[in-house]
Amino acid sequence: MSAIAESAADIAVTLLLLLGGGFALIGSWGLVRLPSTMERLHGPTKATTLGLGALLLASVVYFQARLGIWTAHELLISLFLFITAPISANMIAKVHLHRARTRPAQEPEGIAGPPPRPSDAGDWATFQAPLDAPSPTDKGRNSE
Image 1 (cartoon, rainbow, N blue to C red):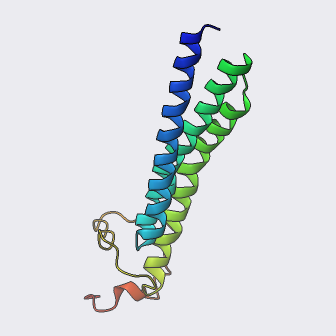
Image 2 (cartoon, rainbow, N blue to C red):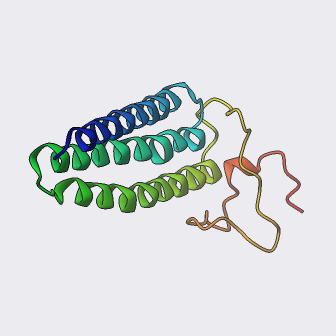
């Protein structure tokens, strides 16, 4: 491998490491600093996932440039991460919405406020509370 190609690979690895580290740091910071569950989901599922993807891509480039081998491990880890992160975030969000409907609020008010109520024709895609028992979140609403 020529010196120019090695330098280009080193620059690419450095940029990917900085980008990945920056995204992971921002995502982790958002997880710690944001007050509500729904807002905390965005840190690890968006920024940290992109950060880890960039770090794994840097590993692929490094091993190809230095050792001349292709490794599928990092690509498989990235694929698994990009598939499972949105699914787990969706499940956590559904549990949060279900708990918000069936129990009084037990967490601080978020920056964005509570999630909006669905229209009268629809409902959230979560388990429904029993029809004969009013939800604790319905206190103070006109039940007529």
